[in-house]
Image (cartoon, rainbow, N blue to C red):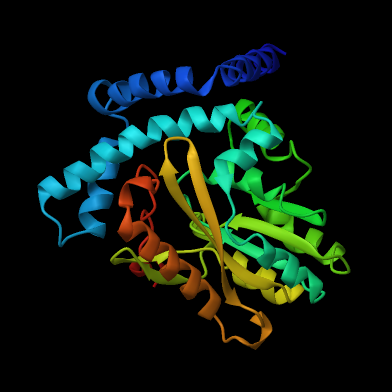
Length: 293
């Protein structure tokens, strides 16, 4: 009962913070940057090691500059994500532009569904919310439940506000089979880290062997959906574009792992252009191929 009370209070506090105007939230973000980077040192060893392994060709100074830019953006990411608890549809549409939204309509017009993949790059939460406004067909967001119930409840509320159907990762195959007769757009993050029992495949990503989920590939083949990459770029503080990049129109005709390798490699190209917007604080490489021999 007490734990539930704390969850209600925690969610209520997050919601109240979300009502603050963007300019004030960004002042908080500036404070978070100082706290996270200089005072708390939040996961600085993890970030530093990840950058060193991903970019061995860069100098220490270059990597340190990326690190500082990452922490500065991390503050923005935090406050923007909280803001999605109360942000309006019109504000989301104004802040996330879709240059080629008609691609989704053209795929639907062929009687096919869409599987969209993006990475932990820029504000994936704000962009996932934008996808809920793309079409009238069923919009599905695949998510990995959080251990913290307060934050999990907040994210579920946030992601489903504009009518999206949320499906937990472990249930997605079964649920999508139920929707097979419908045209749907399913969005999922393609650079999640599998748990040890879930690891089936390693691919090269940012200069090192990386355990990856095969969910995008499996979903696309199960539903015969066209695969697109959601190429998110930051325009300026609080504003983004998301370009839909066609990848595979006939996924069932592709060999194993081709789709997975392609979307992972595309994400790497995006990251290398502006690396500060990827989630470097994530322990992405805690599993090694040699651990499974």
